[in-house]
Image 1 (cartoon, rainbow, N blue to C red):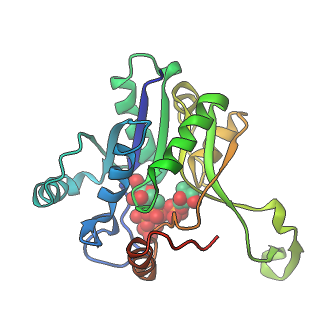
Image 2 (image 1 turned 45 degrees about the vertical axis):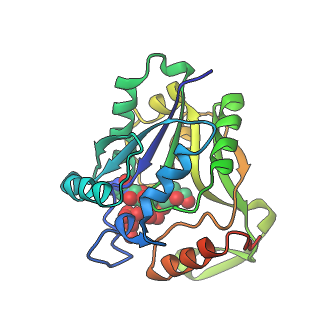
Length: 236
Ligand SMILES: Nc1ccn([C@@H]2O[C@H](COP(=O)(O)OP(=O)(O)OP(=O)(O)O)[C@@H](O)[C@H]2O)c(=O)n1
Ligand SMILES: C[C@](O)(CO)[C@H](O)COP(=O)(O)O
């Protein structure tokens, strides 16, 4: 049985959300957004050790929220970095200290801003990563797609069956993820899969769920409220 870890990245500023309280701390159905994400990992069969990566300045606010909500799920707090890449790297440094056998471990990285993830989705990524070393949730594109070129002057229709939209969790063999995050950061890295891919490891796509939205703009929180109040609602 591998040691499982989950790095919940909550080190961002939420600038597109534009709220005084960072989006990961905003209430969703009465509970802070990132507590929903941590709850799902805690309730999964994969039962990982949880590392929550938070801006250093918000540690006290998080502790106060945990007290207020009686939130007792065990987790280790790590400091966030300037970018998501740096935040994941800081979380990995904690896993490195905790893990007794990194090459035998599995590490999921999940956006704190994706509160509607379910234990079943989480377990699917751990199961796939245990077989293939690198696995991430993704959904097929349902809109028509165009590729823009020539500084926006030109655009051409593109085959949408070739396009998948990435979600988290993205789950990896511990040694693979650690090795990948030893690379220098590049602007083209938008998720963990892109960092691991640079090292030459192929990625397994695991069927995600369109309800597993990322809270980015204020309207996303309204949509999440609606989805959480009607758990059977599916848009796929
Ligand atoms: N320096 C950063 C930046 C982002 N994240 C986390 O990565 C996830 C996805 O990022 P995003 O939705 O872009 O969050 P923010 O960076 O906070 O949002 P914005 O770009 O609007 O400022 C979030 O859970 C966010 O907290 C992080 O841990 N550390
Ligand atoms: C990691 C991610 O959630 C996968 O869809 C996404 O890339 C994060 O993007 P953002 O630029 O940090 O919003």
